[in-house]
Length: 390
Image (cartoon, rainbow, N blue to C red; front, side, top):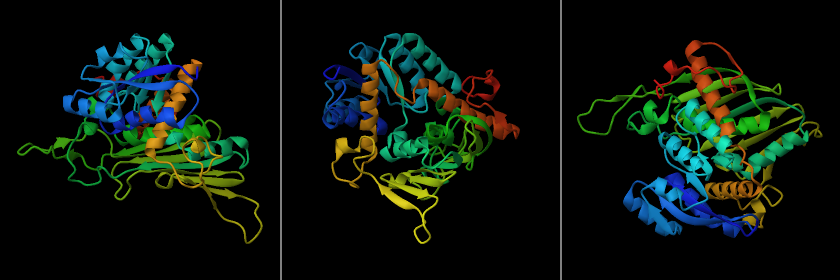
């Protein structure tokens, strides 16, 4: 299997598509094991962008038609806005292609469930682009918790805050349109990431209370003479949760947090210590162990080194650090290994459904003012609450 090649179509040549394209080239040079990724064809509806990015990223071909591209490959990376996920994913799955899809998967729970069900029936390998979950020190934190070193988790505080819509004068975009982005705003764009980490460390969410706010109810369109448009989804969301394992926590997502560029992080308190991670310092982990001698108590800083997952494949020297692009290379390597083993990359499309249900449960809880039990479970559809399905 180490010499097998997997031919990739990359659909989407924007910001995140470019990062995936760089990973397709880097993965074969960074990691020695597993199948080799082949940059076969890049697809984007923008002709100029498709041609330019294909040449720069080393893809053999480019196209503006994703359907024809699928017939030339073994796997597809879906790196387009969420309103395009469903058709591309279902088309790829129907052709027996492995699928790596960016989050959030589709515009709603219903779309995520439809895609996941099709993938399960087809038996293809699939995974979801939870980039920050691939960070070596996030994975190391999970290993520490699983080892029992700090005892059982007691409380979790997690957040993902950015400021790309903090300016009240920022213009309306597709992310604010429920027919394109879905019901979830900050939850869909940012909440998915921190929820994936929370569930990895503390397990499934058993119940929650949600609160959401659309801080700026209208946005200018950017077109002279046009009136402002109503914003369809939330700018800020928070939830108080109880995990199935007994821990409690609070989780927040905000796209209106001035000064926060990529602020994802968590602080986990356990029975015998704490561990803390801050995404803007992603090559460090803060660890506190109860029971140290007087005068020696306090958090210590663990800096990334070759003992942490995947770091040594990039750099032999400790504390030199990895970046966002490297996390996508790690993700693609793990996806290639999953394809070779005939399994899914965790988190997969099934887990994406669980996270989508949690996000929509936060909206429902906020609207009703009630606590919701088993938010990860499939519940009867409520299309009247879903602009995508209405």
